[in-house]
Amino acid sequence: MTILNVEKLGVTFHQYDRRGRPIEIPALHDVSLSAARGELLAVVGASGSGKSLLAHAILGVLPPNATVSGRMTLEGYELTGAWLETVRGRQLRLIPQSVTHLDPSMTVGQQLRLGPRRLTRTRVLELLNDVELSCQTYDRYPHELSGGMLRRILLATCFGDDVRVVIADEPTPGIHPEALEEVVSQLLRLRDNGVTVVLITHDMVLAMRIADRLVVFRGGQSLDSFAPWQLLNRPASCHPYAQQLWRAQPAHDFWDAV
Image (cartoon, rainbow, N blue to C red; front, side, top):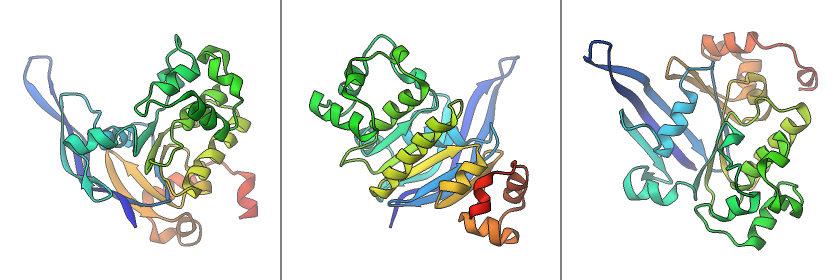
């Protein structure tokens, strides 16, 4: 069952050139994708291809000079107006790229309690336990924790009965391999709990390893959608750019076991 659907999405920015003349800069055009309930969908592509912009468009957090065209729906309802305001931060959640989104002047517990859901201390402790963090983490400040622990705190906000879709925007860069595997484990756990996970990443190897399906981006456009096995076993059935991205990846030992 499709839970998130994007049809012919376009995003254009309105700016002025050096002479003060209005100009339009197309950033996304003709982007279409869908994700089923309990699916891990990876959106892959080079830096600057429009992947994070897609996340911002779905969440409705684009700057005022952006114009959006096309249609985006969650559970069949269009992601606009009051419905978007209702689901954002609740049924529809974002794991941001940077842990600097955490307020350095507040403890972990304070920040998790003051989110859109206004959680109790008991519930926050349960969420921390869900991502394998001790109860002592509740009273810690972000600067007292490792990068991997901070990533798990961001993930903790995505566990709950009301969550439908989680958009994870580049959640793994800059962390050591052990912390990366912890993040991957939690993303897979969300998926196994029936949550739809949209993983935005430039790491093609990671996407091929954990995703149920991939969508390839280039130049603000979605080029192709396929399962990992298709690119491995039937590469000619995938877009040439997807093949190029895969051939450019360094060898990884885990593929010997596939």
